[in-house]
Image 1: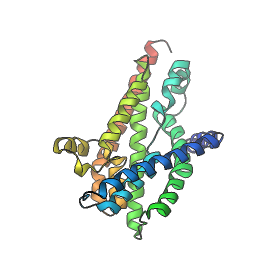
Image 2: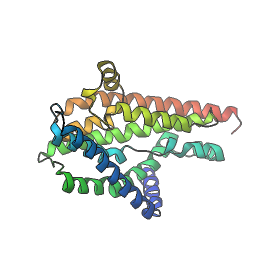
Image 3: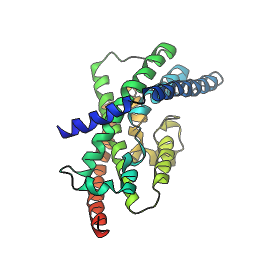
Image 4: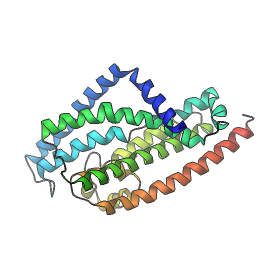
Length: 257
């Protein structure tokens, strides 16, 4: 299957840089320890709502673990392919451009999950007593949330990547996306603690599926109903990617590509 071959090739290419990625994993562990220490210090002086200090530590630790499951490269690498002209060949492949780009990036996500997320999970489970759900349903819903989060990240990354056909530099879109993501995804704090207006914006955006929703499900604070809005966003973003692909094809043809 073509999709599997593309994902596997990207996965194997990432294996060539295992040493540098090991350093990245260690750095992620250190950052996680810093975030946890900050909340432990805050929890020592005041109550942390329904989470408590222990619950908040688990929230931050699990967020740090799943961060790498929903992390994608800038524009799924499409900006570089536009710059080199490779995009013209990609468009004549017997495979939709979105499927091509997403399949390759899926291999990278799989690598991150195995060699960064899993080691982080093991370290935090031992260090902070990260709770391990006993119900299979919790694992299933958490996995579904993470799958939606990864797919949403692929869609957003693709939409950013194709803008390279209209802009000289599209990297700033990724930087803006990362900033909004960290604010609205609930990575640094639960959405419940945000101002009302910001909480409303966050809950109707696709970003909570990256961190807040899967973490809430994993910790037993939310059920499958919390997957409804993310599911709608997955459908909407799929349509956006299809429309963007059609626009890309017209743009390249106009330029004589």
